[in-house]
Image 1 (cartoon, rainbow over the protein chains, first blue to last red):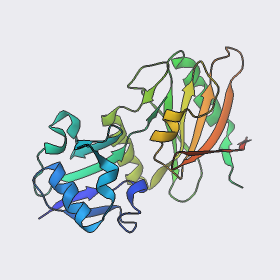
Image 2: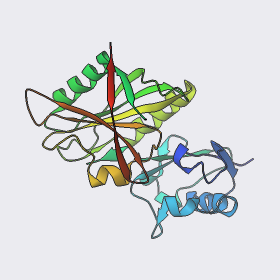
Image 3: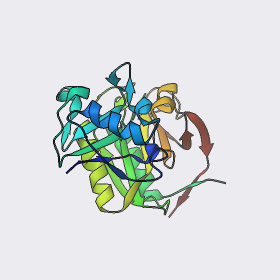
Image 4: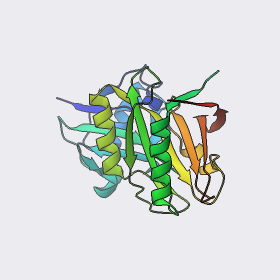
Length: 90
Length: 137
């Protein structure tokens, strides 16, 4: 079993158009690193100075990881990690 | 040339939402079938920032919205928000955060109580391009 990572439209250039990819890891950061190892460039779009980018939302199942440890948030086999850019502005 | 073609009733819904939330910014989406570029389903969103100078979809609402659109084979054809004291032109913040290169970014200004501005843009890699709006009955 692995973790399913749902990729937003704007980052699908890194995954050859795939809407979701499989990954392995025990934390959100490990998942991102695993995805990065096969889809180079994606990590820089998500992580800045070792923190999740302010306007990128990452969810483990239904939970926004910002409220669950950020990049250290725990991930289990069978979970779905969803990446969504914030819809925001001034 | 790229154009936003949109039904009058949807324009009216967006403007009414912007007026209702004034002086805070209002925001939302019009979803449509994948690949169609047809704005069909009006989805007003809460501005979690509740601010006259900033808007942000609530993160739980955002997840729910995208899951729902995914299940319906929809995409956000229009992403709208209001400016309540300035013109209907994307701010630098709007351009830097915009992450849906296929969407029409609609800006409504409610700075004038009697008339509104309704304009549409593409925002790709923080580059703003205005496009004509064709309102159909």
